[in-house]
Amino acid sequence: MPKANSILNQRGFVALWTGQTVSSLGSQLSGIAFPVLAVASLHANEFQMGALNTANTLSFLAVGLIAGAWVDRWIKRRVMIVADVIRLAATAMIPVLWFSGVLAFWHLLIISAVLGLATVFFDVAYQSYLPILLDKEHIGTGNARLETTSQITNVASPGIVGQLIAFTSAPFVIVIDAISFGVSAFSLMTIRDREVPKPKTDRKPLRTEIAEGLRFVGSQRLIQAISANTAVVNFFTTIATTMIPLLLLRDLKMPLGLYGLAFSMAAFGGLLGATLTPRLIKLIGEGQLIVSSSVLLAFAGLSQLLLFVVPAQFAAAVMIPAEFFTSFTVLTYNITQVTARQRLCPEHLLGRMNASIRFMVWGVMPIGAYVSGVLGSAFGIALPIFVGFIGAMIAPFFTLFSPLRTMREMPKTEAEGAAL
Image 1 (tube, helix red, strand yellow):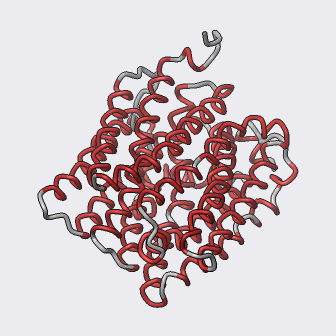
Image 2 (image 1 turned 135 degrees about the horizontal axis):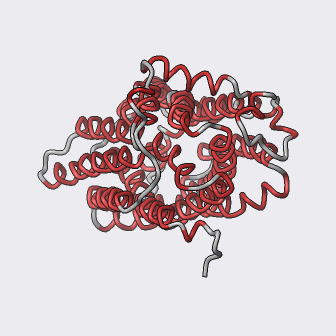
């Protein structure tokens, strides 16, 4: 039986948790099936893979800031429901086109762009929603539970998708993702929360509201350091990882089943990271965990360069430990810094704060994907992979040379953060 003050007694959180667990499983399946479909079935080249990744992430750069201002005006749960319905419809188009015999690469580009646009609004609302459901005392626990179950699906889904694709087809796997968006939307519909739309009389011009979100981020030195670290690592790792499916599936001819299994085994790192984060925070402190995670993440990516020197049959032996430590450090880093941001930010600014940060840290990804496609088509896939993983080594310096390096506890209010 859960304790009386446990978040498991809060029906709204349980509904959110359930829906996002199913949606996370579907998205993990689709996340592997998309590049497999592009490379193995539609024979995408280097430039096309760059374009596909660009289309999927371009909306964070194009509409990320304005999405935050709109989300703060609207009811966040409704934003997530509408985004899920749009993602359901867009994702379902892929198997329809495939089984009709007309699916082409340009269809993937358009569908990826639509999914990316809906995901911008969903993610901004999602990261701003937990403080509405839970008090500040339980936000960290809520984030840890959400990420733990997300990583459990990460462990299961790659192995599942590898076998499903091997015996059926990538579009069949994508059907599961479409269904998962429907489950997420339904679970959100069952939640009753206290949020009301921002009164029109309290609204300022959109430009002013966007500026308020940017100003808050600019007033918080710790958030600036974290955002710079995350933006640099996202930019460079996107350059590298855009080409990884081509390297593994086309050049190294890794079997689809092994491709999925490698990522499945590696995802245990994410599960372990999500599970251990609360204990690691108590052991070494919040700020120090963010710094150490960013350093380990950079070295985990660098180890993937061994793919160019080991025999092809040992590629999985390189990928598994590299992805294991990547997943582990990403989760310890994200859970800690997202929780700190949610505690620091006033509730009325949550959407704009998250959108401002997403604009900075995800807005660089379409640029990185485009650079990857251009470099790969001109010089081959080795150059973007080397540039990406070596360049990512710059990222940890932003947190290393900040107050985070010596902090056991992050500030818990806006004023405490601004005072640093």
